[in-house]
Image 1 (spheres, rainbow, N blue to C red):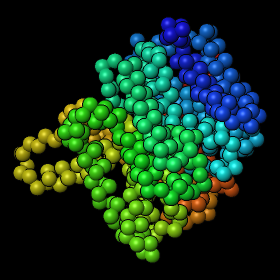
Image 2: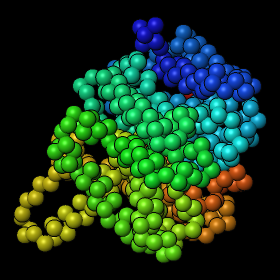
Image 3: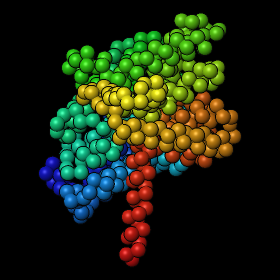
Image 4: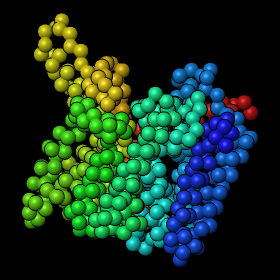
Length: 488
């Protein structure tokens, strides 16, 4: 079977995989027999995706990458990743539509929010059946890993490395790509088991423990409760969730070092140090700003959880953020834009890029103060070792940050138009969408209008697939269609 699939089209393999993932929530039915009526809304789209993928595997033409130039490989991989995510969003939305839970626009929004691990929702979770709650959580868990990682874990081909990079996984943990994917998978699932049982022992029922552990590790933020983690009112539950969110926002290569006991190397990683500095600096300031009327202890508790949630882009909450002062909301907007570690399940600009921007600014100042002919070679530390801060690294980081900020500004202004809200509210909500965070101050919900949802959907897709992949894939797709149309 593996040999057969190895010769298949990448599109076919990924469509097969998506069908299997959407069928997975059917395993809930034996435990909750009253939900047997939801069998067909899941079975039909899952079977359709698997059948379509199988037919494409049998009759489709496998993509050959051996003779293509590097630029063509990037374009081909971007198109494949973009198609896969579009197909996953479509198939993931169908159970919501076929079961009558949501209208099409809302269903697509919920599916995008699930797969991209954004966590913004238009559903009333208190009224949802268990199978729908599991579907939402499972989408986030799989979306955190990415479709390509799961495919490569089982079958790898010539184009797999390009697809792997295109989906936002810059690091190889092992010399072999398949072993890298398997290592990521085992780390991810190991923490899932530990997190689920920890939450279960702390008083959550098993179903809620599993759902919350999946969404914390994927930095997704979908909850089974209307008031998220705050509804449990448990400090131990909050602390375990914080640990899971921190794990989810940490580069898998760094996690592997930590699991091997190489803590000295972990501490040397520039991104880890920067993460620690941000938390140590922002948590006390936020605690002070929200402590009025609640006490410093309560303020500190809420600051720890919600700052970690925003910076990791997990999106869980313990309070109604709409009640926070503007200063605290401003901090939350900044950390949501920053995001977690590069190569993790988190969204945002990513800490490495933010760190590099600060380093570049400091080096520029230092250069002006040094004698004209002095030579200064700079480095930064990754899990793999010391990396030279050369022109290519600077251009990549600066280019991404500029694009990201530009999209954030445009999206925030669009939110003001579509929703008629103030600038602070629009910036907060769009930062949450673009950073795939999921925190809301009341704009996104069951009554949100379609134009606002569309703006947020664009933000979530751009945020999850790192902007350039979406732009390259879209432009390349348009070019291919134009060429085919020109041929007749």
